[in-house]
Image 1 (cartoon, helix red, strand yellow):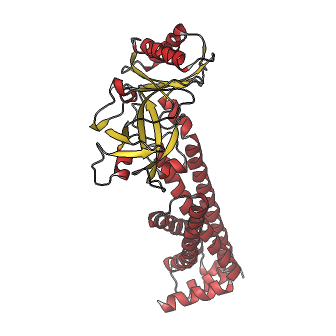
Image 2 (tube, rainbow, N blue to C red):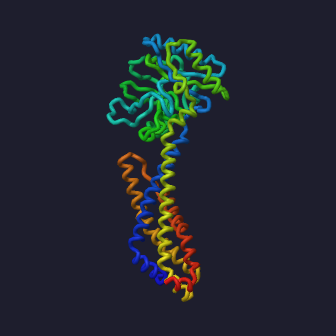
Image 3 (cartoon, rainbow, N blue to C red):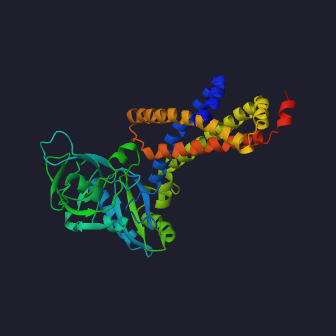
Length: 412
């Protein structure tokens, strides 16, 4: 083996600049491709995250009031609106809310297990809804019960939000009570008064899809509060199976028939969940496509560099190739020589690229609070770069193996 590698290493030392450039190009490509694959996988994983909502049947109406009403006036109008929506032939249920999964209004609250606790146990997205909230969204109750109508309170524009009862997501329940005994237990959410867990749903996505929301994925709570905000609210409507389009046509007409002192944008004010999901994850989808394009371009440039350099070396070494052929070297020996030479260059570049890949990932972790990249992405990148290098060098290596001794010596 030493006799086989010695002439290759000697030749590479004579072409230090070209060898170094290709090795560095492979290293940089590996570092970028590994992190790009990690980002692509993370973004695509977001696209398939379950919201907990019956997305094929649910749509959202963003309703704003065109009058400065008091809380009792808004509450009366909201109840009239809900009655009208629930009476529609294509509608199964409806509920008012300050926010909804994936996107919408609402807020977050720090959650503690005792009122004296200074550091929060976690953070939870807060939803408000009446006793129809679970059925309207299609949320699955895995333990406990739903809210009773007598537990539903009214929330005006400036009123503080709190409820003595709550339904929480399984992710939040497991975070607060890892032993699995969350039902019936109490927690504190920015209030000196406790909220008792009466039900657990699974899953339930938060309102956002940003890095902070991902860090507390699935941790959410629902309070039995009917939103009567004079500035506006969301009406969440669940259509009967196969009647989504009809429900979306009928619902705004029913609301306007109850009162025309409202604003509903005909384009963005009424959205089904397919549209909501598409818009929410549009940046993730775009980032995945961009990273994919960058990977393809970098791999193509690296392959072109390997082909160009090897072709140049074949042209320079025609005499040496001819001499080796005259001394009895077979075509497969010449082919193996160039494949081995390129493998050594690629291996050196890959070794440096692994270090750069983890260094770049560490920088993104500290700078942008991203997750750490697993070894799997680096392993895939290493295999891709090594195979790419051998594939790129194959064509010029085959041309070199076909050089005849006579043609090589005449070219000198």
